Amino acid sequence: MKSAMKFDSNPTEPGYVLLAMEVWLDNKCPDQAEKIFGRCQELMTQADSDFDSGMLLAAMARYYESVGKLEEAEENWLQVSKIDHPLLQDALSGLVRVQIVRAWKHLRQGLSQIEKFKANIYDATVLRLPGNHDTLMADAKTELETYRELLEKIVLEKDLWRYGVKFSEES
Image (cartoon, rainbow, N blue to C red; front, side, top):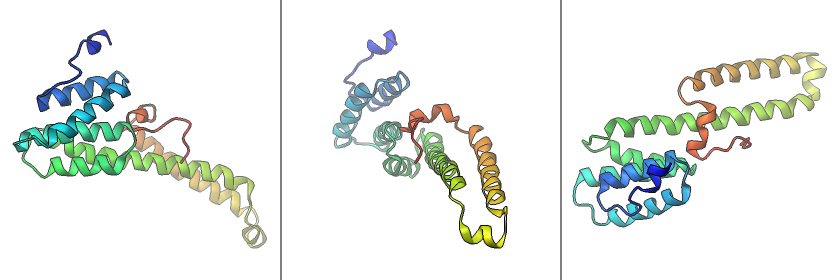
């Protein structure tokens, strides 16, 4: 962390801007990352090559991911992915990560809904098919838990903070 504090907080070269963004985000310094984001926006008006634009767009995409603005992150990653750039792999992976984070959010919301619905038995189901409600809820939970295991192999739930997802967040 001390080495991060010595890092240039006002870089002017797009490559250094991207590096600064990564340093501040990895060290959980959102205020510094926000300053770098502002710097990215300033430098985008001056970018005179696809290379520079790609670096700045990648830095902004990473910032947007970190604050949970997935649509904006996706838009920036899409722009990087459309140019022949050294960060193409990052852009393509970033696009996939955005979808994975969305899947995590839907998964968590679904599990929360199942817990709520366990207490609310739909009367028509009980009258026509006694015990079916519990089976339906158990099957849904099992399927979502399978998805959780698969998602854990790609982005760990404990790392969702990197994408603006809070652990207490259920929706």
